[in-house]
Length: 412
Image 1 (cartoon, rainbow, N blue to C red):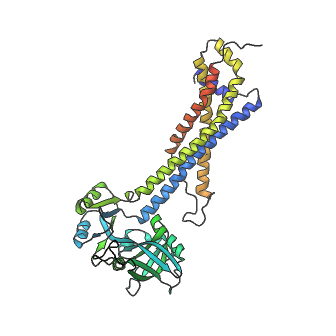
Image 2 (cartoon, helix red, strand yellow; image 1 turned 180 degrees about the vertical axis):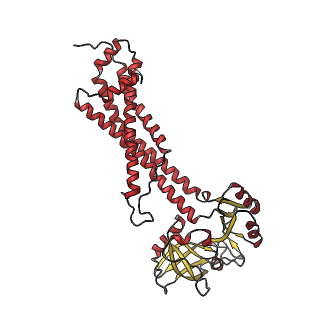
Image 3 (tube, rainbow, N blue to C red; image 1 turned 90 degrees about the horizontal axis):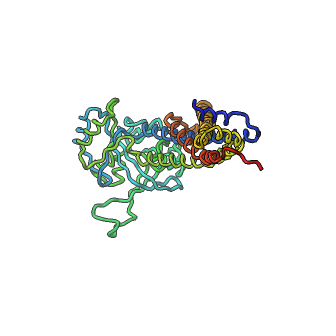
């Protein structure tokens, strides 16, 4: 420990002549600790939500999604299916068809989406584990395609009762006729109406919670007026150990440039990008609060400088340069930050442990019982660097004030 650091340590922790300076210094250190803890917890909250959403993606998003590069739908023939199954690692291929629709249930009405899926859809993901009411079934016991599973939010909007076996959900879809266009005098009131029995409510991923109704894909084709095997997307499940770039490259070779191939994370790239932006915006806001807290630190350091004027003048008389004096008080500020960071990190870790084991904060009425919190050790160096930078800037003015103190104090 060099002389400047030793003196800074003593100036910070030695008892001051005025008790108020000790109190102000403690308040400044506590403020730094609170700011450091708040920065860590702010990042940890977004880490928790990110882990939560990634878990949802793992349960519902397919390993690979294939969509048309142009247009909303494409023809899907058995030759394509056979070629996909020939690729090593491809375990299951499921087809789906999505479109916007209008729904009525009793006296309730709402717009939303239909998603027609085939029988392999259940094997593709863990959709049955996300059923909150009822059960998952798209084809009834008689083999009729008259049942459906409704998303949570749409179910709430329509007040769906899965226990009522007599009320059906009506699906309205505009007719699609090749010879007519809505811009050339087509009949906009020409609709296809199908009735299905809602037997389950799913609560999981964002798109399902909002407005989706799962039905059999053949029923979806009937609603849309498609006579051939038309799909919106192919969803692929890979065998364990084959989630590698080589597998994706083989799928791209088979499908060709007319299709877009996305892995699990690429399917939700927009949401993940938005979450990362929100994460750093929140971090910046909390860092701004840390800047405001640093004014306490400036005040504490300034009062230490005023108290130590006589000591500083003696040191100057003994040959210590103004630069050395400045470095002493810069180190006082940095030591104050180190103390605050140590206490703040300890508080953040303690709070994270308590939240994980005792659930201090709950979110009632949602999928999450506990407020998600995930401490990542990579966040701690980032927070420490930000706090130290703010502390260094806060120490500059008091340090420069100490640097200007002359060797002899003039007494009047």
